[in-house]
Structure formats: C-alpha cells, structure tokens
Image (cartoon, rainbow, N blue to C red; front, side, top):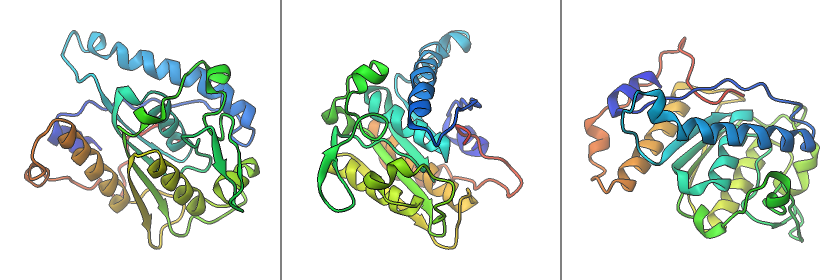
Length: 239
C-alpha cells in the first residue's frame, strides 16, 4: 500500500494484533472489547503523534482474515469515524442487525459477536443501523477459499460454512441496512491476498474518499494505483 499512500496522501497505520482464540466467540468478544477502544484512541491521537499535522476526521479501514473481521466490526460499531471499509477473506463477520435469517430463512436472534444484538451490554457500544448506511464496504474473498476446517462453526447458521458463503451473506446483510457494498470474488484465489485483490480494494477506498470529498471520480485515473510487487507485504490489520 505504500505506493498508493504516497500517490493519494494517505497516512497508513498498520498495527499488529495479538489475538485470542478466534474459534471461541467469547474470546472474540474479549478481543474486540480491548482492540476497538485502543484503535479508537490511536485515531483520536493521530494528529498529536504527527506533531499537530492536520488529518481528516474520518478514516478508512483495510484488513485481511482475522483483521477483516476487526475492521468490519469497527465500521459497524463506529460508522461516524469512517468513509469506507475494505475487508478481505474474513471468516466470522458480525452482522449489522440484532436479528438475522438463518440458513433456512428463519429469523433468529443475533447477539454480539454474531450480530449487534446486546452490543451495548457486551462491549459498551450502541449501534445505529441508519448510520451504518453511511459507510461504504468492500468485501473480498477468493473463489477457492472454501475450506471449512479452520472456521468457527458457531457462525454457520448465520453466515454459512465457508468464507465465500460468509462474504456473500455479510455483503447482503449490509445492503439490507442501506450500505453501499461491493462484493469481489476473485477467481482461482484461495485464502490469500493477491496484487489484483489489493488493487481492487484500494481502488474502492480511493473512490469512497473522492465521493466523501465531492471530488470528481476522474481524479482516480489521474493518480495511478500501483499494484504491490509480489514480494512486498501489504500494510493492513494482520490476520
């Protein structure tokens, strides 16, 4: 992302997280109750860290795998802080509603971290579905990312059994609350980030930034997005 950040004047914050067991929903709740306030504080103090350099009041989020789940939750729980979220290959998303249809179509309760039911009690956050609609979401997944072996089974009834099903259901749930969503399923790709996937996500974020600032979309072409070299690690919330 360094070339893109340089081209567009972005400041990239790339923390590395020490996560608990992602297969246990209660430990996911414990993670997010610590990680999300910490991220919120880092963003609030960013101008201070940069010696008073002015920064936008709204940011954009980008994460892969476990990091995708974190940035997606942050966008849902703190929508006023963000233009857009890019979430790649997440396996256990939080739905933006307190109830959700299960895989048979029956409406069931979706408590946090499956949905935002009791989010106030679980992590102290009130969720406004109308505010979520102001955030643009890019949801990406590899078409071959269909293994069921490394996913928490507790999410099956809400999102399906593999990451492709889960990305699709999550994107549809976001659309139902009015959010602008781009679902990108990359042919021939497994659980990985490829240069083309990264470029798709970054293009989406740039377009969202331009839309928020009322700049004409043609500026996207004037500042070329450079795909990372194959040996360059992308800057993101780590999985």
